[in-house]
Length: 336
Image (tube, rainbow, N blue to C red):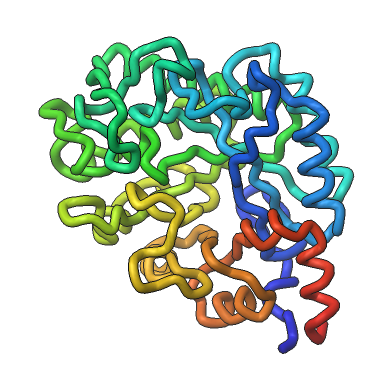
């Protein structure tokens, strides 16, 4: 199978990608105890991008504040002290010929007091469905929501100062922005709850705040948990409306994944590109590129998903995590 589309360049906003292959964000727990970049994480990304064949590398979800930290040894974008280390990380990825985007995140009710030393916060006082047994979070006040919006913007500024080519706002996998979007975890009665437009209001506020601080020319991606795959949760119709609003607000690329089900396959569908029904539906509603990841293990699977217009870019995560030479081997194996 000729890898025609997978190796085709793509331009989105100010991002110029040499091909459609994405190494998506995967948590490594290789940051230092304080969240800074150390030798372990530099070596990891150097190894994963050394083939020179990765068009776009989105580094793992990084916490915007201590209260939003999800786990030990998670990467930080939470204060000025991390910038120098992040710059070393972007230099490593750039040296290997890949565009670098940072994924920034607040974990909301996923956060645990034993990690942060603080109470977990969420849109509503509802335990996180992905983390049964966790403490019931405290509902955010409007003032605190404004602070989180500012924290996202400040994190994006640090990302830009560190030399990244763009920033990805994380709204998937049961984390805070997913919690706002999902009616299962957002039962607020104010302007941030209720109808779907209210549930993605904070997203639009974050996009606007990020653009104000980094400028209109700095690329913004958004990872959207487009379905919770749970009764009463986010539907694809919700996500189509949100996607159109995000495009209008200035998002350059949408990265489609799961919501409260996480990054795992929906029950009974573990095939390559298992979120393709979501990415395909959203692709038909927007004019910006769409990323699809999940279960892609071979180059021809990625090529087929592109041919079928399920997405514009294909993320290959676990296969590259498990074999740093995946891209080189796959393209050598196929007829290029």
